[in-house]
Length: 174
Image 1 (cartoon, one colour):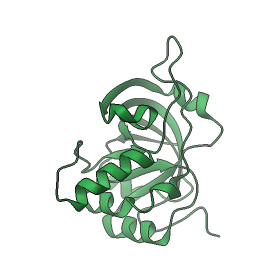
Image 2 (cartoon, one colour):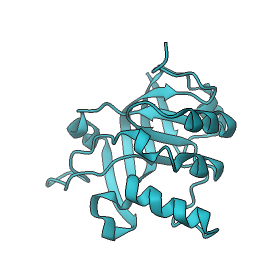
Image 3 (cartoon, rainbow, N blue to C red):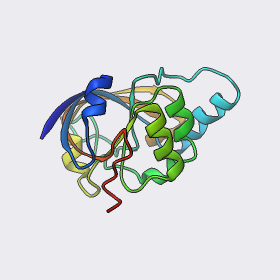
Image 4 (cartoon, one colour):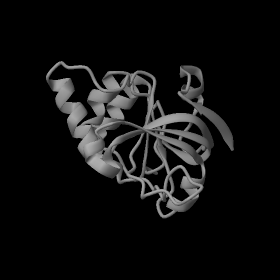
């Protein structure tokens, strides 16, 4: 089990290999379909994003409301393919880590290799367990999107698996 910290440095990122199990700490941003669509439209219009994406991590999630004593409610990963249309544009702007579940398209994988990025899988069905690793949640923007707003999460020992590494190694392909 490897320990990593977000935002992750390039050396640590390129040492991750498909199949590695990791415990991630630090901070990451959340964004799902609606937030990705808005950011993509900003990119297409040549406007700045609401967050500096360079070197950052995005977790594809929309958490349930928090119970007392927790920063967030259950927050399992969203199916990542839903962000595939938008991911290459964000990767070109410096996004380094995506967290979600399921396969990615060839276009996303090619962009990951080109931009030296990784895709980490969170375990679907383990939403309550994942929520325990989130120690703080701060609304950043797009409050009108509710659970799909962009948040900044602070995480401690979030359990993840390297699904696709920066060289294209892929646990989904045998």
